[in-house]
Amino acid sequence: MNIILLGPPGAGKGTQAHHLVESRDMIQLSTGDMLRAAKDSGSDMGRIVADVMARGDLVTDEIVIGLIREQLQAEQKGGFIFDGFPRTLAQADALADLLEEMGETLEAVIELRVDDEALVQRITARSTCGNCGEVYNDMTKPWPADGKCAKCGSTDVRRRADDNEDALRNRLMEYYKKTSPLLGYYYAHGQLTSVDGLAEINVVQAEIAKALDK
Ligand code: AMP
Image (cartoon, rainbow, N blue to C red; front, side):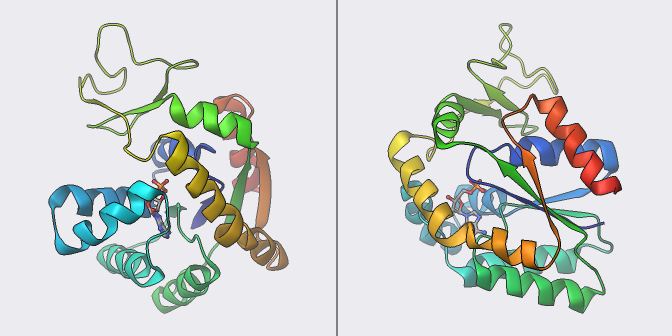
């Protein structure tokens, strides 16, 4: 089963993707993670995308489609969770072509619905474990008092450079202008399920499970 998690920054795509990796043995493909890795490695591409990401703009379709193509070619089988991809209609078309080439299909597109106020609160309070990617929130799920990640024990707590109010406003604008048309696109394909992303994490997990087991 291959699925897309769709929603604005801070909607909980990463958190839900991690859960699906653990509970269903799926493979998370996050273009944001791939781009951050390219940036950290200091590669030419990493240098090109660094400023674009810091501003909260979208990286070019050509770059992200290339990254996804590479990852898909490296995998032997499906079970993909597309997290943060596609973000434009051109990316959605490219994904359909890539899956077809692999003999794979797209089973579901899950929209995580949240309001903008909640997003600002979530994003500015967000931290993640640099080792395992576990997501924390200063208010609702703070980094453990002993300084160690509850999941893997690492002390590498990180805050993303683009998790500030200015970049977030830009990321939201990019979402509404370029990504939200995908909701109509997948609805018209009969593949869209919308879930309340503001519910408790385990309630969201249950709603997603219901949609996938339909
Ligand atoms: P994310 O971790 O998904 O919030 O992505 C962080 C940043 O990486 C975004 O604000 C964009 O600058 C870039 N990015 C990630 N995925 C894509 C994509 N599919 N298309 C264009 N830019 C992307």
